Length: 279
Image 1 (tube, one colour):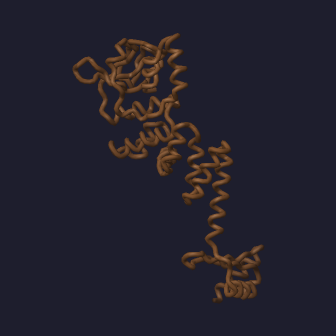
Image 2: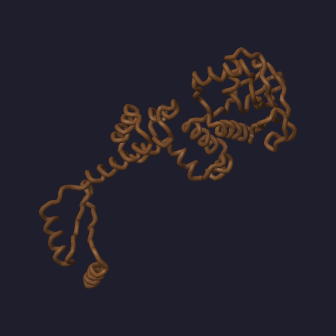
């Protein structure tokens, strides 16, 4: 772990002997690269009550910030905010050598991920920042986060959703699984309808995915035109030639389409192949 479980320990991530020290809260500046933006007020109040009674179980991780005696928070903003709510004047910290910005963001990301503190959109935005500002590849991020590359790609795809759907994920109204179900639908109108249904009916992820599949099937069906008499006549002639069911489907907008020749046994399949070879 990047954040030590013990108050005094040796870990490779923190670079040697880790010892806590108490510093005034007003000497700690927020992490300017903090990926987490949303802090649930109720959970924060509950943590503040716990800290007021029992203290902070795990020190914050900070780095020296300039020569004026101040520190920049690297990890532990939720605990810092709760400590302020609890009225604490000092908090225990572990002081780390100042990391560069990419490492600072990575540490904050990992600390939040280890505690399941980031919502999917905050996580995706953190990864995006590592990619755009610090030129990390998805493979490097996957190694940093301890996830597969496909998991990183799927999280990043959530940023393709409209702002209102992203906001719902940030507020915990829908989950990452719901977001993936919404991404299955390309039609923005149908996607918005499913999103409203998720909120109104508290749909499960499985139910949402099922509805998304149904909407996609319906959309594909609507793109096919009703068959003209000419197409029906050609289908009939082809069925007489091949001795099996033949379907012609023509797309509505560009007149492209496809022909399906059905077979119900190996003998029928070989007959179709032989007839095609004679053409």
